[in-house]
Length: 276
Image 1 (cartoon, rainbow, N blue to C red):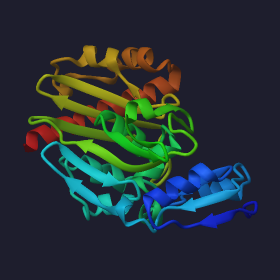
Image 2: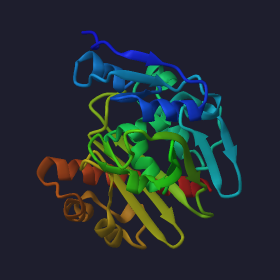
Image 3: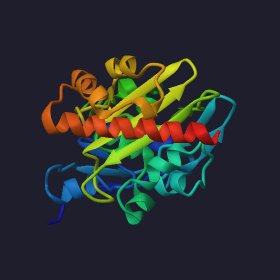
Image 4: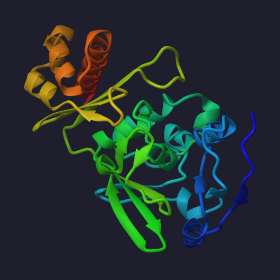
């Protein structure tokens, strides 16, 4: 299938892109196009205008300081996977990027586009929520910083206004002594997750996040209390199942799936700790 007719725009600067989004009726931002274009081909979306931001050099730039890194929104998954940009997460970002789709998708897909798409079964919404990352958005009204945990409000839904553009993703450094684990369950490599768990084990406590359980990533607060101060080898799926079910509202096979993913993320974090 082919998309409905649209007008194509390719601005050279952020201010130009913001003006286009403000002035045009029914415009969509095109970055990697790995989600938007298939949806358009199936006629599930029929925007009148596409604003292609890949020409804007600022959106591929990265800056790093003591607090963390700021990645341009058009930074591709491949750039993170291959560490062509600095990593401030001790390997979590490259690990997550390597599990996204296939190499061709990672070469085109972007971190800003994934967050704007807001699919909780994708890697970046859950990973960036766990890291307490934030996006920087621009419109003709100015700029604003939005924590990812506040950006994602539902399946394919964010707090971005229709004329706003994500220009950067701000990722804090992991605090000293923190180890991470991530586990993705999918039917085969390259597919979206059926369950996606991220575990951060910090000296002052654990933090657990789960994707693909609800329409936005879920922090497993009740599960965190169950595992508090317990080494991963002593934790079993049976220990986690009821807590994960309470945190996510899942039951039966789905609850078991999420409990297994959470446990494997915890064990991966424990292995990371043994290498420190």
